[in-house]
Length: 168
Image (cartoon, rainbow, N blue to C red; front, side, top):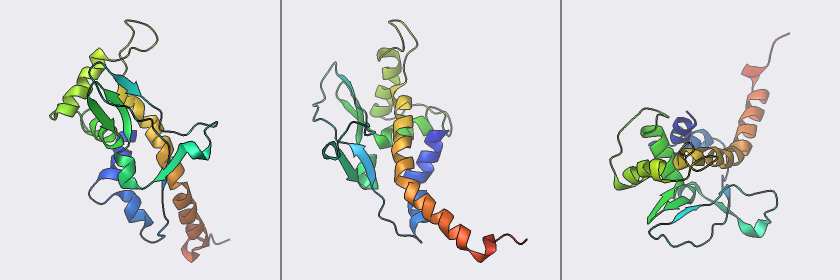
């Protein structure tokens, strides 16, 4: 269900993040780890973490706008590059976050193939790992960190609003 919420927050026609921020006009930037330059090629499976680690210095971190975040690479499978947007849309629209669907684009078909051909969890022959689904927790972490100042501002506004004062 996280992918459904991420889709509403970041991807739908009027992303909820913009609608909620209209009043506050905060400059929201997504803090992510700088990714290495990896060239897609047959046989490649490259998965990099987008969440900055505790040992990452600020020189290895970048702050990017929503459109850049959505285009950020989450992993590469053979010659196909998957982005944050791909992970959210596929897990929301095909893998059951919102509803179950059939893969239609070549990228969605490639993502489906990855489940059967990609890494296994725990041991050889183990449970196939859904790499796109595995991207949702780190994407969520970045979004939560980005939205924290907006949530705090909204809570502060609600606390100081006369309609939220509790009569004693």
